[in-house]
Structure formats: C-alpha cells, structure tokens
Length: 158
Length: 158
Image (cartoon, rainbow over all chains, first blue to last red; front, side, top):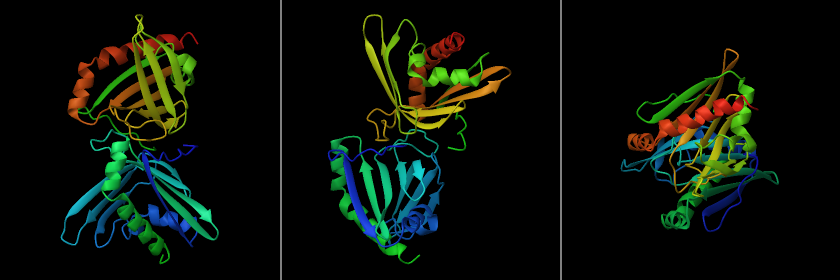
C-alpha cells in the first residue's frame, strides 16, 4: 500500500504515544514474539503464546491469559509491512487471506521519527459506526491505551 | 505473500484453463480496465465501468449490467500482486483495507507458463463449507467457467 487511509472519525479509533527511543527499537518491540509477549495485553494478564510470521498474508497470533487462567486468542493476518514505518493487520482475514468468521477490525500501526524518539500511532478501522461504538464501549481507550503505555515503558528496557 | 495456500476441497472452489498466448498477455487482460471490461462478466451482460488500482490495498471494482439495465456492483481490494504470476483480491476488505459489510470470498488467480502458452487458475476461498456450497449452488462453475472461457478467447484478439 503506497498511501495510508486517513482516519474517519465516524468509523475509526486512534491513539498515539511518543517515546524517546528510535523507531527501529519500537519496531522490534512490535514485531518480535519475545518482545510482543511482554506488553501486548494489559497487566495482570500475560501472553504465554505469540506467533508472528512477518510477511503479507502471515500470521499474528497471541494468546492472552488472566491470572485465573482464562484465555483469549487473537488471530490476525498481516497485510502490509514497511520495516520501521508501519504495520497493517486485520482479523477480517485469516492468515493466508481466507475470509474470517469473526471480522472486527483492521489495525494500522505507524512509527515516525519524533525528535530523537518515536511517535507511534495505532488506528482501528471498523466496518460501520455501530461497530466503532461497540469497540469504544468495550473499552478501546483504556485497553489499547494501557498497552501503548506498556510498550512505551518496555522499549526503554530492551 | 511468499507461499500460496493450497486449495482446501471443503472450503475452496477452483477452475483452470490453458491458452496459447504467453502469461504477459493474460496478465494484461486481467489487470487493465479496458481489457477486463471485455470479458469479466458472462455475456450478454456487459461491464460499463471498471476501476483498477493495481497495488496492495487498491481498488478492483466492476459494474456488471444486463441487457435490461439491471446492475451488479463488485467491489474488491487487491492484497497481493506479482506481475505475470498472481493476483490475490478479496471482498472481505474494502479498498484501503477497512473490513467489509459483505465478506464472501478471497480469490487467488495464478498464471503459469505452459508450453508456449499459459495455464491460469482461479481459486475462490470461503469462510466455511456452507458458504462454499452456497457459491457452488449460485452457479460458480457456470459463471466463472464462462468468464474464464471468455478471457481465453479474448486474449487471442489483443
């Protein structure tokens, strides 16, 4: 994809953060399973399994687990990958591009140089206004906000 | 995508044809609007509008029209493009990768040298067995078979 879609306030949810480490490091935190497992779910949940095949059509799968052992599986397909710049991933398709039975979002994550650090943005794109609202009501800002804070803290340790 | 998924007989529908013109010409017929408009719907329907933005995330839109003026609009998003080799396109996503309200198939079209000509294959991938069966019952083999015959005849004229 050569052009990024602009957020549509009726259909999309967007968050951004800045951190004082370079984009190359933030990229690693987003694309290597051993790093993703450290921050991609709000604590005290953790990630016992993370699988990444970093190519268009490749798998991005995480298993999130609560302290009580409850699990949530997140299965995405990568669509567009520009190292150190952006990731596009969706659960409207399974890995290998087959249509999914549980389509919900396409996510676009961008990484931009910001002074000596990085501004990273996460955008969730939905099929319609009702789905966007449902995602907001499910706690998008709290949930995604927390993990974006967690990765900001985590990248300073790697 | 570096690896193509293999057809799953329970979930996918596949057709292939051979034609005695080289892959480069068959590719043109599949990717240039003025050519696609000549064969992509079974006659006597025709295609008054065709829009192609040949990049991952780009639009593939055709308007099909019956002699009586009835119209059907087909809106797809390209996912993977390897010139003269393969096209992957889906209506599970809109152009720009937003989840679609009418997901149905991902199509993989491949073009291989075959003697002095080309073997081309069209695979339709579905979310589940019921959707595959519905597509077959809707007339997949007749409909797609007819257009694959039409492009075979058409490429000899360009």
